[in-house]
Length: 157
Image (cartoon, rainbow, N blue to C red; front, side, top):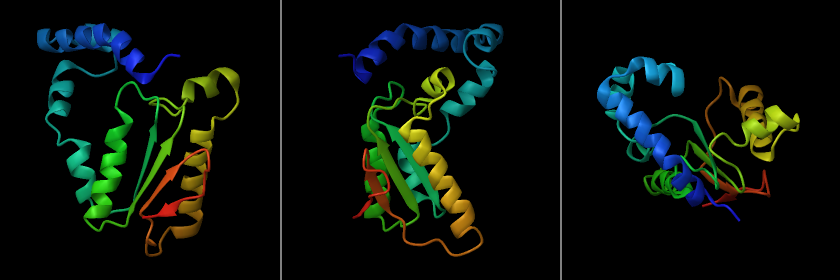
C-alpha cells in the first residue's frame, strides 16, 4: 500500500526542480510548470512565518482541515497546530483530520468521479453552518478535533 511518505519520495525530484528554478529566477519555467507566480513571489512566501507558529496565536475563528495522506504537509503538523492552540487557550480553531484524504481533500477525485469526497462534504457543511448559524454573532467555544470517519462527532478537549 502506498503512503504519504511514498508520495513525498516520488515528489522530491519535482521539488528540487522548483527550488532550482527559483534559485535561477526562472519565472517562465515556474509559470509554465508549477504555478502562476514568479520566483520573487516564492522567495517572499518562504519568508512568511510558518503556520505552526502563526495560527495558534491568531485570535479569530479558523477551520483547519488536514488529510492524513497529505504528501505536501505531514498530518502531524495540523494536529500540533490544534494542540498548541488549545494549550494556549484559543477556542476559535476547529481542526478536522480526515483519514485517507490528500492535501486537496481529494478534490481531484471529485472532479473525475463527480462524487463528493467525505472531507470536502465536511468542509462545505462547516462553511454552511458558519455562514448560516454564526455570521454576525459571537463565536462559540469551538476548539475541537474531529477524527473522521465520525464526522460531526467532535470531542471537546
